[in-house]
Length: 168
Picture (tube, rainbow, N blue to C red):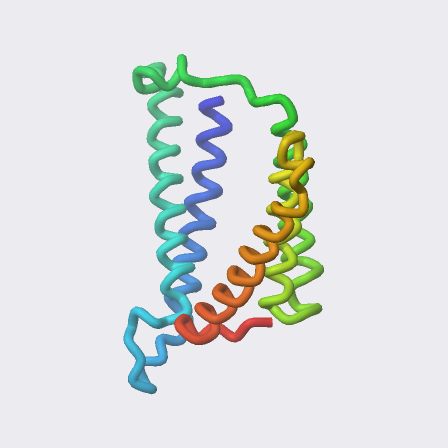
């Protein structure tokens, strides 16, 4: 496991640094009087730095484990087996996210694609394995629809009007 963590941490550090570096290249719009904090690369840059920081922690922990120093107290005993069905949920999440990014975004208005993704995601995971929720599916659908409409509009608004990112 320490070897896998070592390799994974290096890959994520490279990815995080690449994200931060590319976001640094994005325009700042200071030439039109905008604040440096409104730059479209600000959020991806901060996320890239956060990814790099977390990968560095994983790197140091994996090096420590490979040296035989073990893991910090409490970590080894706190590992629980995965819940039944968790792999299916992870796989479905991956399929939904790839469908959103690869099919919906760019083929329909961004707010609509985001709202549709949000609605489907909420409905699937609210109803999956919850018989009580399945009996009240209409109530869950109404709540999911409200959340999806607000999320789709708000995300599109924030990215286009605050971060000045042109959306597909």
